[in-house]
Length: 166
Image (cartoon, rainbow, N blue to C red; front, side, top):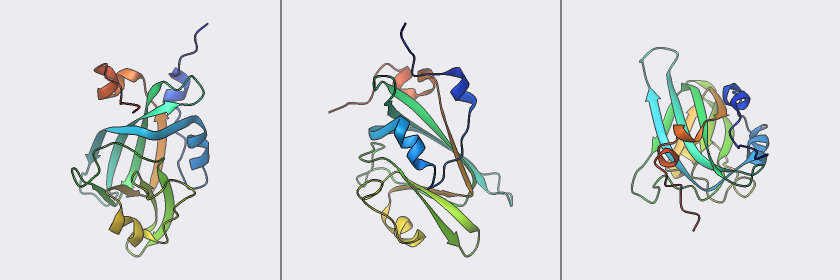
């Protein structure tokens, strides 16, 4: 019996992503050579802040390494950068890093950095200014959760052209 990397039960599960739980996500998915395939920002200009939805194609470690879309949902989005061109093209060279820092205006924020210097464990940002000043793809929010999507929900996988592994 073939095991699918897509599990309908896991699709509805939205575990919180923090520096403490990042290891659980990375134990299941490898983002190295993955690709950011969709970013959606909803900013109603209310005190609750914006929200974001980021879809990244990652490799499923448990089910034979097929490409699988992983969605990150951010609530209370306070800051972000997604630069096109200056080296960041949506391709990930390392697993993402999640850090927690206090912000004078918004209190404690989680920083999801898709452009870390050397990947988790190799680079630990010293403060939020370090991430904001260096990363070409980061998001700062009050809460981050994640879930697995079906392959059809990734623009790249639905089109039948998975990211290159070379």
